[in-house]
Image 1: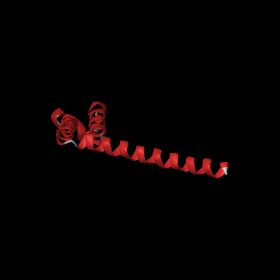
Image 2 (image 1 turned 90 degrees about the vertical axis):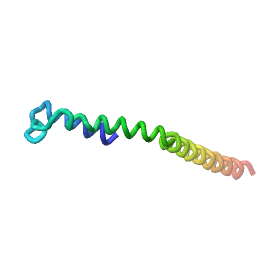
Image 3 (image 1 turned 90 degrees about the horizontal axis):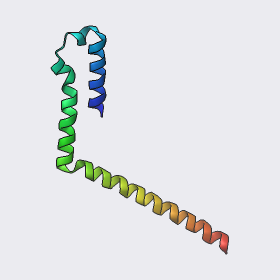
Image 4 (image 1 turned 180 degrees about the horizontal axis):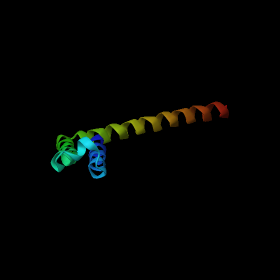
Length: 80
């Protein structure tokens, strides 16, 4: 994500004509987009993306279980 933001900023600076970026080649300005695509390919190939998604789901599952336990404790205490 950071590489995409960097690429957008560099493109905007190049089009706006800001001094140091105006002199750079378009290859340098657009290189963060290529690096972002490379990162996504590596992340998908190594299983990093799916591992992070599973960790996120596991955290949500544990949070829901804790909330259910708390609600159940409250229900039981009011009942007796």
